[in-house]
Image (cartoon, rainbow, N blue to C red):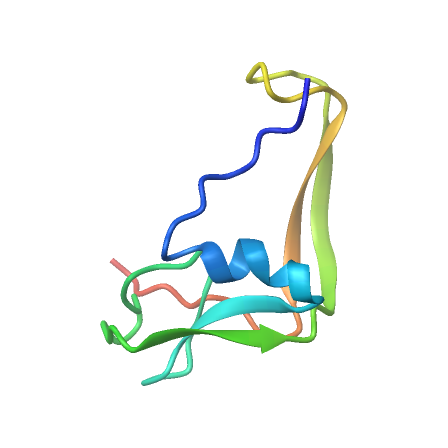
Length: 97
């Protein structure tokens, strides 16, 4: 079965399609410089809507991972890996509730 691709939207297009040109783009708030991933329409830190995708190095560290053998959906063929990746540009800061 072919791999299921994500739905491309105006919010996530830069992330999913930037690899075609050899770059990785992550969404960033231009007001407070907070990185947003996954992309959002506004910054959860300062609520600004001045959001733009910026090219990043792509360097990162795998903080943790697990190998799954349970096919939770038909599209997943096991085994598959789920990883937490810490980018060198920082992490998305979320406002506390």
